[in-house]
Length: 458
Image (tube, rainbow, N blue to C red; front, side, top):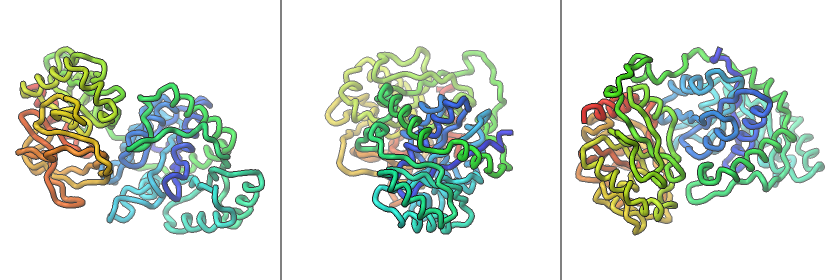
């Protein structure tokens, strides 16, 4: 049964220890053995799941106890892991780092406990020897409910260095399940918001993932790791189901007039999305069709609604601007009153301009890059009625950008934010809902149902 799927959580004492390398390498190494591997990422990050998907051939999925609530972590995990032989969950930040001011909420440790999954601790050993034992002991003993089942030592300099580390760790009783040497070929390039997404460097990403798999296969005891994964506790919850979530029958009528077409932006410039959002749109009765704003000069024929998620339009501002036919098509659709939902990158694309490059002009606002990173979870409430939510609807989301939109809110704002400070944000105009806030619709499936219904009636 899916509730007993073997699973591991890959965690670390801090960011930069090598979680992504190890987690992605494990996924690819086990997949190369012929196993169906389910890839997951703790937290709201969109980029790592792209590498996970490349490693496994399955959709990378997020598990975020802040955005979706702790009660959905297990069901969403089981949804992604259906039919799989193994699940690998990459953690976020340090093992015990969660939402600011919220204790353990949304930390890797919190998610590991919710999943009843053993943890593999990835330790950057590059600047220590015997001290590694004190570090591992501290992480193992901090929360007795978190089961640290083994350690993978990363960036080990030599055989002698490895010998000293293993000798020190014998005193902790925590087994060493892998030792990885320094390997520049597994590094992935970064820029202002983290790793460069797979969609922008696919051939290089394929090579990097292959290098990760080879390094992990050579340096880790895969049989011992699989044995640890099989020791995960059974989950008592049921798998999440999009059709059940939107309270509609699993099989919708097939008459074309009852399935409004919703175009969803993709391609290199718009890579940030949660798979469950699209699944909810389809379950609510939409005909979901992807399009690429960098290359497609028209919206998909018959488009009745538009979803533009996050990504890096600032990197592709000139190319997006050059595609004037599509910009005009988006503006025309918005002016017709059709539902348009835009998050972060989508917000920028709907502005008059981005870094001086003309955009769609749907919103009377300008956007530009800044040197300041805006990052964090947000508690939000819908200020008024929109195509996504009724006034007063509460949602949790996150912001992640180095741009600014001026003004930051329209006459009718999208959200009132309560954290980290009270302010209004975003734009509601006719059928348009545009905001910096990234949201996971599994937490509020009525959002998808409302959006599709508006597509039917607009």
